Image: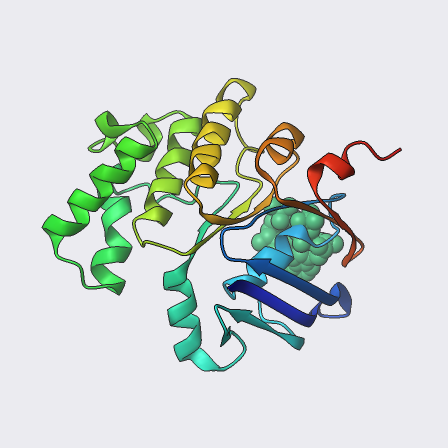
Length: 229
Ligand code: ADP
Ligand code: ADP
């Protein structure tokens, strides 16, 4: 079962060629870590998967559905693909619980009771059940990022995308977010993670994809990857 298939994907920002004929296939349940130098296109690659970015060539299929085929497909993809950003992107004027229930209630028309029950379950899972009624500014960075993960999970996604989820955190909070991601991985979630956390890659990645200048220059299991000269 193929979760994501990128075929000859080209992405330009004006005259800058950010992704060059990218081919990538992610099986259902697979964990991919994407690494490479700053500016190599890692963030662009995963942002194209839930169409935060338009592509100019090739195609992207998510569970067989062509992402490049109209707005109906995009809506469907956003329900199936959760994303976690470097800067948390929580709504500051909403409580943790409201952040977690907004999309399920608006997009999926889930009842308030059901949405709140689901949110509380995921807040428990990311180990911050007691923060449900707080506002993001009252939480640490690590707690905010775990809210962002719980919020994404509340949509019951089949795939989770992470864009440097620990890069904006104080060092002492990195591990609590990585532990949440490890827990998700062990639960069988299909994950694509842009991260420099090589300990995480070694522990959970099925494959590490190395990018440079808009291309995938190497793909290998972490065991091979880290023993190369
Ligand atoms: P990475 O995640 O590997 O650091 P990015 O995907 O963020 O790389 O960016 C790849 C390249 O595309 C960089 O040179 C960056 O400056 C450029 N880029 C990214 N987003 C935009 C944008 N919105 N407009 C113009 N250039 C962009
Ligand atoms: P990241 O590495 O997390 O992608 P960046 O600093 O590369 O962070 O980009 C932050 C935001 O600015 C992104 O939305 C990206 O698309 C945009 N961006 C990056 N490079 C450029 C650029 N050269 N011109 C315009 N927007 C850019």
